[in-house]
Image 1 (cartoon, each protein chain N blue to C red):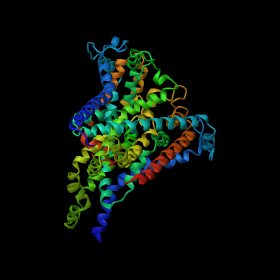
Image 2 (cartoon, rainbow over the protein chains, first blue to last red; image 1 turned 90 degrees about the horizontal axis):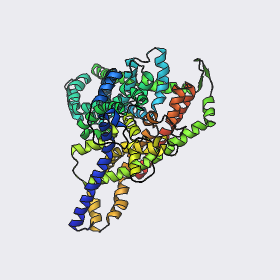
Image 3 (spheres, rainbow over the protein chains, first blue to last red; image 1 turned 120 degrees about the vertical axis):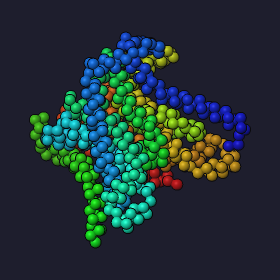
Image 4 (cartoon, helix red, strand yellow; image 1 turned 180 degrees about the vertical axis):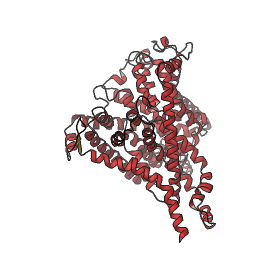
Amino acid sequence: MSMKPSDSRLLDWVNVVLLVLAGVLVMTPTAWMILSSFKPSFEVTAYPPTLIFDPTVENYVTLTEQTPFLRYTMNSIIVTTGSTLLGLLLGTPAAFVASWTRITWPAVVALMARMAPGTLFLLPWYVMFRQVDMIGSYWALILTHAVITLPIVTWVLLPYFDNIPRSIFEAAQVDGCSPFRIFRRIALPLVSAGLAVAAILAFVFSWNFFLFSLVLSNSQSKTLIAASFNFIGEGSTNWGGLMAAATIIALPPLILAAVVQRWLISGLTLGAVKG
Amino acid sequence: MRVNDEHRGQMAAMSMPALIFTVGMIAFPFIYTIWMSFQLYSSTGQITGSGIGNYQRMVGDDEFWNGIWITFYLYFLSLALQLVLGTGLAMLLFRAKRLPGIVRSLFISPFMMPPVVAGMMWLVILDPSLGAANWILTSLGLPASAWLASPVWVVPTLAMIDTWQWTPYVALIVLGGLQSLPPSVYEAAEIDGASRRAVFWRITLPLLLPTLVTAMVLRSVDLLRFFDLIYITTQGGPSNHSMTLNIYGFRTGFEFFRLGYASALMVTLSVIVLGAVIALNRLRAAVEW
């Protein structure tokens, strides 16, 4: 790469221009969604589309007044929080044991659950939950969404537990510490950063998950994501409301992702890339 | 030996809840689906054993073969786009050296938002008569497109939306690979006076292959099961032109309640995903350095 310094500087500029272009391409659709959600209803379908308009929150107000939007939001919060907590509760001690004893089944099962199509599980779940009359219940949704969160928690936490020097555990054992105590008093505080990343990723993926609540919820327990289907039906006449709904649904994952962006990548790639 | 028993007992107690959950919610349902795929479910709820009947039916079912074709068409098109553009974007990010958090957040945003939301926003942008995309095309003197409503363009349009969502993800994986390459090879190439193009094709790309295969595995698992975006936008239409195997299986099960046949379809799709992952892992072993 024997080049004059001026060549190199020019290439740096080309690089920046191309990056900005890529950033604009990535950002524009999302920006358009947010912009449209603040347009007055007569302007949102204007053709040619308008960029300058008097922003209004009428779409958001209509959404809460004419649809059970707040109920759907509550449902989403209940199901997502419940399944995230369940995933952490089950996955954290299991990841600790798996890391200590080097058993591999939790990681393998987590990978299998990640690979199988959701419908594969949904068919037997549907039959099972119908038998015990649980379709439409929060528990059916929390349990099924925990199938999403548990593998995430396991995969995110395994490397954190693996990173704790084994000598710490062994010294504690010699001092007569039981595995319970080692887990609670020594291991957990050391992986607190990992717990935060695991919780946030589990929350985001549970929040985003569409398929299970599409079938296992009813009009009372429907989550926001599953309800977005209804908004599209109405959306043919009401783009403003549709974009307002989309903006609100996208907000929690986007905010949480921005908070943990630095640690996100290694968790999202099942540890294939160190962030 | 009492201490040892207690140790073992506590370790078991800590993994037991996850194990019970896994057996009840993942392993048992998985086996149950396989069993269901050998049954016939009547509309009145009667279940009769049908042996390999569902699988025999699948072989003669045109919609099944259409599903296979759409699945792989969408898969290869999206994967190719995302790998090429993702690698390009990674090279740009790598050269920029410093990545402010805000830029990182920006590139993460498409794939952290629900695919359902992506579908909603693109439905509005790509609306055939009032959408912004067609306005841009016609302003440039290009013909307008029906996008998701066009039998010809529906799969490329879905691939484009998925590429918008997931190219930054591939880019961040490849960027991780670039950052872990040994600088010494570049220095050697520089001393030898190799051109930039030669350095990319002869050094960077071969060394990046394991990372690229990793990205392929992660994307393949999602792309072969492509669901949310299609279900929210086209539900397999227009007239089956975006009916992937996953969508076909879902509709067979939960719109027509042919649970046995749907199970057979989903078992088949799982075998396809598993096969792809095994094949790609072989490939990764072959390109490892």
